[in-house]
Image 1 (cartoon, rainbow over the protein chains, first blue to last red):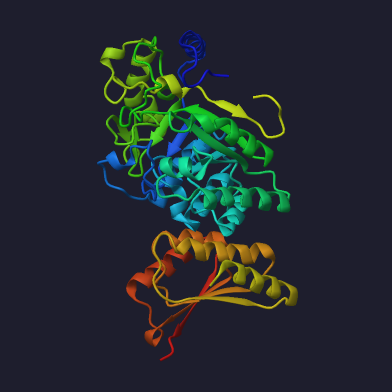
Image 2 (image 1 turned 90 degrees about the vertical axis):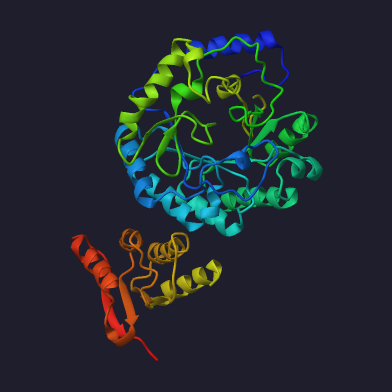
Length: 319
Length: 113
């Protein structure tokens, strides 16, 4: 388990060294993040979505199919997230089709995160039918006051009800998927509620993930990230292929504005870009040639968070 | 139509082994078209044996050809003025036939009024 937020810095350094020892290059990315839409309906306090300067759009179905088909051919067990810097459930049944298509093509590890605001009972039904493997609700607060100060635009009771309704429908249908996880991004304004949050959700059958706050490549303040920490090769740079809705393959999961574009899927395949334009970035990380890195990597501190989170499984007593 | 109401209709059609027709008149964009896809597929998976989509065809954007086939719908009835398809819609129908896979039959009728 990773030490999180204000833990002992020597523990964290040791964890990061151990994490780095496990990193290596991959011929095909083990994790692919696909921006099916860049639109979002919230303005969360810890998210840099409002700093995004590129156009907001939806991915074409032709491009989405191209991506899924390539993953199905080379790495059907890759962890695939059909969401990046937007709220995928704004797509409604288009998202259902996308999830179902990916499952039909044989993908085995399909994961979505969501703010939960659109997760009605009707949505819960089709999400279960889609075959999605894991749905992760980003909640970040327990009390209404804290939740709504962070998840700006969402209502705590409505979102909590949506998650609990999904758990109930899943139980009623006897469905084994999707696994339901609630995520808590720790920060100064919510750390006092984390224990309540964890116990509340574990008691209701949801798994819990707690992680440190991200800076989104420096877009938002994250005092938990220590610039003096011994730097390691970023796990996201080495594992994650992040694709914007227009087909741009960018640096990683926090490159929300496409400050580093390794290539575009209109011209090349994932594999070609991953082993071409993106490989330069990966090698610089592995060589610890951090000064040569392009932005957003060069000044980023999110590598301290990229490899670690605490996971608690409902029904288990330990983490 | 509420999805719950559609599911009730589907259940009734399955119980009585009756054909079922979904009407959709008007435009659809990339988002709403997939709601039709879900409704059609739900009905076929539930066991409706004779499922028809009746429409003026305005919904039929390029990517709809894929989901029409994948939905399992048996027949598409296009009701258009004078029973004559626009060139764009005729191309879509031809594209569907040219796929060479089992798909819905397409019937063209003059629209009412």
